Amino acid sequence: MFKKILIANRGEIAVRIIRACREMGIQTVAVYSTADKEALHTLLADEAICIGPAPAKESYLNMERIISACIATKADAIHAGFGFLSENSKFVDMCAKCNITFIGPSANVIHKMGNKAEARRTMIEALVPVVPGTKEPVYTAKDGIKFADEIGYPVIIKASSGGGGKGMRIVEDHNSFEQQFNTAQIESVNAFGDNTMYIEKYVQNPRHIEFQILADKYGNVIQLGERDCSIQRHHQKLIEESPSIAISNELRKKMGDTAILAAKAANYENAGTIEFLLDKSGEFYFIEMNTRIQVEHTVTETVTGIDLVQEQIKIAMGEPLSIKQEQVILNGHSIECRINAENPKKNFTPSPGKITNLHIPGGKGVRIDTALFHGYTIPAVYDSMIAKVIVHDKSREKAINKMRSVLGEFIIEGIDTNIDFQYEILSHADFQSGDISTDFISQTFLDNSN
Image (cartoon, rainbow, N blue to C red; front, side, top):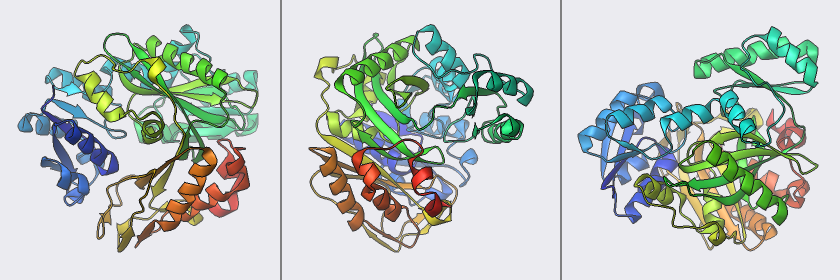
């Protein structure tokens, strides 16, 4: 049993983990940068330690300072949430060398699945369907263009170490390939320090469907249903829901079994997500595995009644899964909207600043995960997501109506947010009918988002 856990993160996910620990009777340690001295996670934890200046590389990405904070406070384990060090195999190795439990998979699994080219090879060997693409890393535009010409356009260039849409470009034809490749590669080097690229056939107008999995130390693996994450801007998710309107019970079983197969092929342990693209014909393809808790884990919690963060902690403590596959039932429909401090009318430009007025909605079937409070100043140096609105109801139609009601009541003044933009998406006829894909925002709201 862990007595104390250090949370190597900030914002709403740090608050979420602190609350889960509190319910389990586990003490918590918050780490914070100088910009987050008065942040909610710092105030809620049992202990708090400053680990450096505002820039993430000097604080939330500073492995030595976080490890030192863990040792100084005698914490048993570290939960890194999502982002920052949550998928950094070097950090996980450091934890192991210092006899600190990392709440997540092993360094080897994180390294293998974090490298998209290696992950593809692993899935191909396990007979998991993948999008046609390069089997080996690509380092030059000259090599890349040969492959692209062979499989036909459009193709998508991706950074092997990428995430969040960085180092990613869609190429429509031969003539534009070289420039797009070089641009993506430079972006990858700047963001991840890695010039390794790979190329896939671009699946046009797909849905982004992901399956939540849990795996313990004893080889038990279950899946907790799907999340439809097709509403994206700049390759970043904006609205997620569970279950997906596009998935039949038969297809859910098939994709869920494939997700379990993929997790077992990776020798996975703890909570993770298998991500697929689903095309118009019903064919699906593995695209990547996220070796951490995800932003949108909340919709799975809402429809299954399972606390994923607490399950992560139990697995890390060596407990076997307490849930069997046949006990997983998707109840009703859940939707999450990510609330960002940004201006959708100015190409989603971030909008940090002080919250001058705040009203957070509530009610039956409404959950708000946030670290906001009246008078809080949103720093300019971190991700723009400031809240997650999650609703649950008996049907998708009722959940959409509930979400529109909640967004209409949510007041955040002093900064720009995407609340009105989210409301506009939810009110669109195609979204309400479920006729959506990953291109929905770019095709439907292009004029509004540029």
